Amino acid sequence: MTYVVQAGATIRQLLAAVPRSLPLDPLENRILLCHALGVSRVALITQSERALTDDEAARLDALVQRRLGGEPIAYIVGEREFFGLPFRVGPGVLIPRPDTELIVELSLERLPPGGRLLDMGTGSGAIAVACAHSRRDASVTALDLSEEALAIARANAAANGVTVRFLQSDWFSAVKHEGFELIASNPPYIAAGDEHLSQGDLRFEPVGALTDHADGLSALRTIIAGAPDHLTPGGWLLLEHGYDQAEAVRGLLAARGFLDVQSWRDLAGIERVSGGRIS
Ligand code: GLN
Image (cartoon, rainbow, N blue to C red; front, side, top):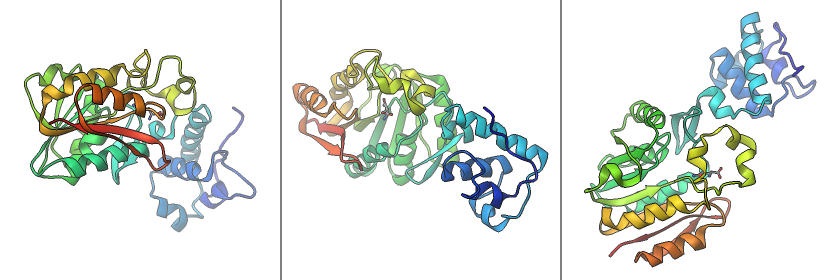
């Protein structure tokens, strides 16, 4: 890369559209500048005539180079907002997507007062922590196979001031004899060989959180098969899935005896979550 951040340039000069100085899109330029200088977004305006020191320019330059190399901005700054809360993220967990706020909203609507919620494959803890934050009455359990993910998820629960029980578990193995009023999951659902795995942010995310290394439905099948043994009467199972999997997931739910089987659309109008309740 030939791009170099010049020391002595001011914040205003670096963010100017003409002549264009930083090479990323305007939002990303601001995020990396804040991170390099350790200042808030407001400071970019109130301190616009501040000139970068040699150290600051070198720091910003390194961040810009990483982004130009394709690294997700959330990993570079180590944080992503989800459901209005800050989440620490790193290469050991999937970056929380706005699409996933849908399963949080559906879970919050369906969890009875004082209910027990299980988040399977919690990753950064996004679903569990967001639910626990909105529902102080709930008792939230979150599991993941990855110890690295659980460490990040625990930190996110603590940073957001919520109590979540975290378990290292291969799907239901650590909750064998437990019942929940609601089970939610955003499992790996991308099929092996899907071209999206080699594009954009996904290239840098943990492959085990994205794909089942099979047809994309195997984790969803495992959860659907086991969930009735872990749901209390009337309990709901809610599953996030890929843009073209809603019909298949509804079929699996109906075949396992779930009632009220349906799918819900995300903000892009795509059927993103399917679920049902047991009798
Ligand atoms: N929603 C993610 C994506 O398509 C995939 C998440 C997952 O596999 N659970 O980028």
